Image (cartoon, rainbow, N blue to C red; front, side):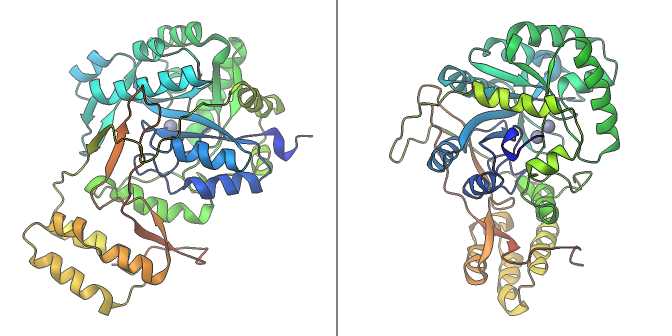
Length: 399
Ligand SMILES: [Zn+2]
Ligand SMILES: [Zn+2]
């Protein structure tokens, strides 16, 4: 029988994850403790902004912090940039020790310095390629990520590059290479992972079970959806396929019904992780900041988003009339929106949960200095996303 403490989460997105999660670190550590799990990995998308906070909070509460990064990855960066379709996949790298952490930060830096691009939707993105993954391998563990992972996806699509990529990763990471399986109730995912399990068995790969967590509870799926569809000054139709991307208890994870061994393998990774030796710095230096602050968003779209938020929280008309009026008359609407303290005041007044903003000109400290190890966390502008105590949200506000 598996106990609560026989599983840990190795695939978790926090609010440092390019606005793709509403999980904050202090709450996360509390939740992990309450669930009786012994460790937690943070695997933000191409970002290491929450490392210092994670290590500090986790150690304070006797939880083992595990530092990871879910990268966007391509087979070859040159081909990627010469090709218009910009097909990219996922992969997770986890730091086993201090050397690994340095390499992980270098890898993250390299991705932003050399492989930065704007997606078709205008999002700021970066990728790594197989060569870089091999170059910075020392001290690190690789897991194959979600069903958009480069190995599962190429396998599922019967792509011939798979052999080369799989061999390169396996030969480099050896015993520190794991295949991930998960179940978020998505049909395609089930098919992909069925194939991946067969493949893993044939090749003697170790398999772990993960949960791609982007929020704490199922009822936070909608606030997360608001965030992801409005991030980076852009209003998109992007949404997750199910409401299952929440941080599950060990029991809920076991109920997914994977082989016991796969759950136990998560603990093998847990055992491998050494204590990170982070140097605490007061007001640690800001190293390099990429300011994401451009937008082609129109006033109408902006107003629609603002209204959506306002209505979502039932903010009385008297409170927001001035704000909308101000935005209408402002010369630079985006600037007005970003500089306004409206949402912060509302936040204070109504005591709403705070998360990293999607709309207010996100400053992402995504490039860290490899010699300093600790990237600086940023002061974040907060905006409300969910009323405290309002624990079940069933529908969108109509506009
Ligand atoms: Zn993924
Ligand atoms: Zn993920």
